[in-house]
Image (cartoon, rainbow, N blue to C red; front, side, top):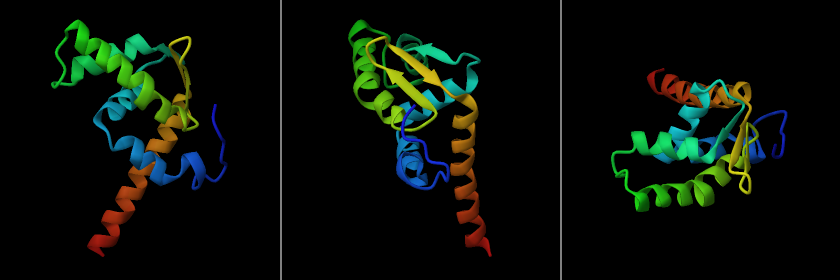
Length: 122
């Protein structure tokens, strides 16, 4: 997997990188899928199917399916691959997931939001 950072506050695991990932609905769908599956390895096609089922802006036509597949392949999966919990094998169309680390990083983002909200109410 990509650049490991023990402190989790710089580089590819910075909170800013995670907020950037969570900024797009399709990347949130991908994170949701990765948290729901028991598999350590999933296919790009599985992820395409998951996104199409949830994204109301996408029809289930061949061209829409190809568009989602291309977008995941060239935009969203590489962005997730820049983060430690996900390793995307573009040639093989497989995504390797470290679910425990993904959960920890998402929890970090949730905690940051809670801290910001708590400061606002103090």
